[in-house]
Image 1 (cartoon, rainbow, N blue to C red):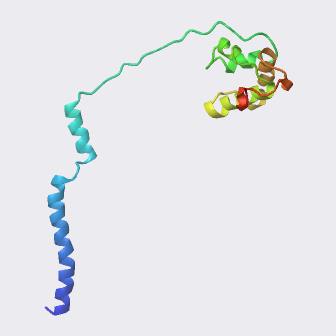
Image 2 (cartoon, helix red, strand yellow):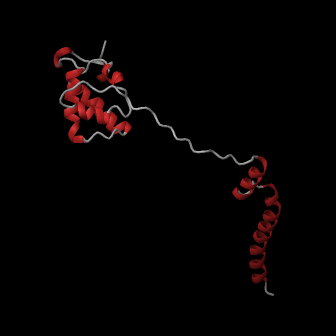
Image 3 (cartoon, one colour):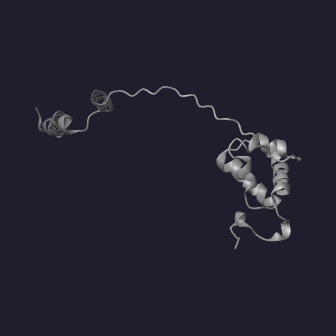
Length: 144
């Protein structure tokens, strides 16, 4: 064998030998596979089975006061809020109610159709609102 081939073989043989030794010894020290972990945990902890539970909550009997927009409030607001909770909010102007409604739509996923937002804000402003010239409120964080 010529000297050049011997050097090439030595260059390739050294990493292969080190890799083989690392694979043989490392398999003992490296973390076990995910399947191995699952088998080990299944042997230690008995499986837990949950029975389905059917919970039926009673429908609220209180509705929003009659007015133009009450049907929108009864259809969309009471699925998350009680009527009393909405009516006990601080009085807000119609634009402030619109801000709150948009927060419910965009932030919490309320299914209020966009074309009904203005009508609902006007309704809430009428039944639980304040005059536009009354000054800032807690919605814009400027209340004193």
